[in-house]
Amino acid sequence: MDNKEIDLKKTALHDVHVELGAKMVPFAGFSMPVKYASELEEHFAVRDKAGIFDVSHMGEFFVSGPESLDFLQNVISNDVSRLHTGKIQYACLVNENGGIVDDLLVYKMAENEYMLVVNAGNISKDFSFLTDNKPASVDLVDKSDTLSLLAVQGPKATEILQKLTEIKLEEIPYYSFVKGAIAGIDNVIISATGYTGAGGFELYVSNESAVKLWKEVVNAGKPEGVKPCGLGARDTLRLEKGFCLYGNDIDETTSPLEAGLAWVTKFNKDFLAKDSLLAQKEQGVKRKLVGFKMMERGIPRKGYEICSNDGNVIGQVTSGSQSPVLSEGIGLGYVETAYAKADTEISIGVRNKLLKAKVVKLPFVN
Image (cartoon, rainbow, N blue to C red; front, side, top):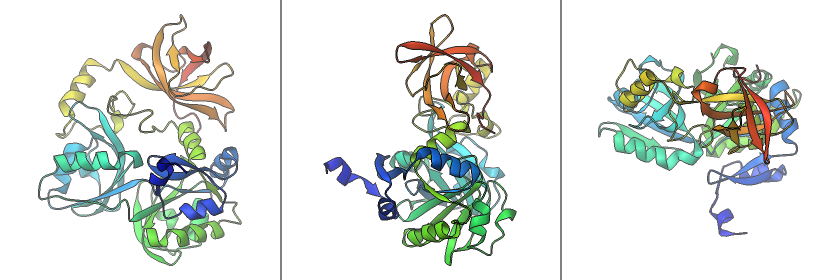
């Protein structure tokens, strides 16, 4: 075992994954399950029935104090003032140049109290960025190392979890949450969110209770065919829905307007990136993130060149895979704005060949 493996963090569920025979890989500084048996089976389990994911590598920050809202309004692209207690918002952390520091979820826990859920690879960067921009009156606490996060996703997820709680799960609207007991464990944040587009819940629980909760969900879901799922299926599921992955499709060199995230960028307030993003909005962006389908047999991968039909390079693939549901190659990538319209024919450079593709409206799978 080399030093890199020794240095990897482990989630509270690490030993459970090893017992289940998962293939463990390094991801964002953690040892994480990429698959248990078949990525394809795990993908279809989530689309058709239900899957359970360990996503405890994600970061959780708690923000509190009388100036919390003003602070978050300044660093976040979305309008946090529109949140009521029990509601969640998708947003971007943005720097003064309009670059995306991270994409995240904002939970309003109570008046002047919020939880921010950030990407695993960005925990220390985000915490530093927030610390540098916060007033002294705002309290910022990183609880990432004390919380586990289980995602139970798929059309049968509600039915499975309902066996374990008295909370009426079907009454929790999308992008809302409640705090309560599930599987005999108190104070679980039960959140109607997910990264698969298949419906379901994300459960925030103390590390001490994570193994119990995982096992209870798996047992309760046996009749419905619940499967433990790894990062491989999570990636193909999110790509079929056209969801951005930080570090691939968005980063500090991309703006929310280029990435199709204008819907979480509100100009009715002052915030760090307002001037640069307003200028970009007025001038028009030079490139846009688009979805595309392969018209010829081939699988697009991150870093492949996107070309116009006359062979000129017009962009680059940021995410790509074979879609399990469509049995076609699909991808996301930035292209010059002139080529961003749906049905525009383009080419993808796959292994020294230019293969035909076309721009399509997202999501790839409804």
